[in-house]
Amino acid sequence: MSTFSSALDPLVVPARFNGPAGSGNGGWSAGALAAYVDADGGAVEVTLRQPPPLDTPMEVVEDDGVMTAMHEGAPALVARRAALAPEGVPAVSMALAREAATRYPGLEQHPFPTCFTCGTEREPGDGLRIFPGRVDDLDGRPRVAAPWVTGEADLRVVWAALDCAGAWAADMEDRMMVLGRMTAEVLGTPVAGEEHVVVGLARGSEGRKHRTATTVVDPRGAVLGRAEQVWIEVSPEAFA
Image (cartoon, rainbow, N blue to C red; front, side, top):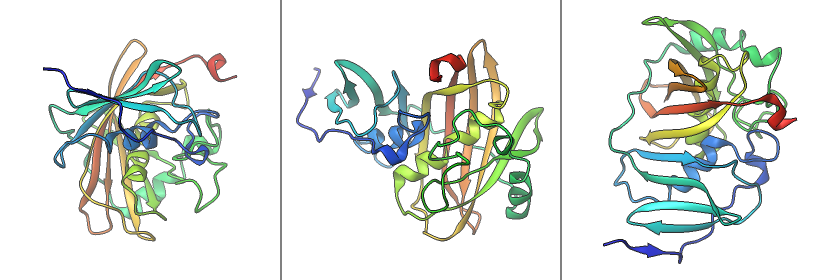
């Protein structure tokens, strides 16, 4: 029998946590809705149906454990327990991640320069400033990496850290894309001030859809979180 409830706190994405200008960062927004899902510590799958609005309360409704954040009468994000945990990506050393970040394509040209996760126009301590650069090919697929020093012990921020490295592994410098779906498993809370490694891997494309995976590793080599994403290629005019 279906159970349906609207007696849940609204979901709000504060303006600070933007991705493309004027809409929520896909990873942070997905992590915020994932917190409503009773996943028993397992992975959660979140699908983005429309750009998450900023500073706007979204009604969250439940139907058989599936959480939907509504905006203007239509689903904005849908979250559910994942059937399978994401595989993630093998990590690289901190030294290699730091060196790779010097080759971050977004330093030259960035489609979303104010993005909370990877935007070059965000100040240290405000945005995450995760700048993934090419490391190598893993089984013939591009792998990127970057260091990340977190200032916040927040699981939603881990979702955000797991976000954009996938897009840069899939060559976002050559084709603008936005997050369509993210399945993540967060295994721990980051320690503020510690330097982590973020890695991303391109896994293949079908038309406008690009599949990727990401992992965050703490300074001791423990996996903090892993994710798989589906990115949707969009026209630059959509954000003009």
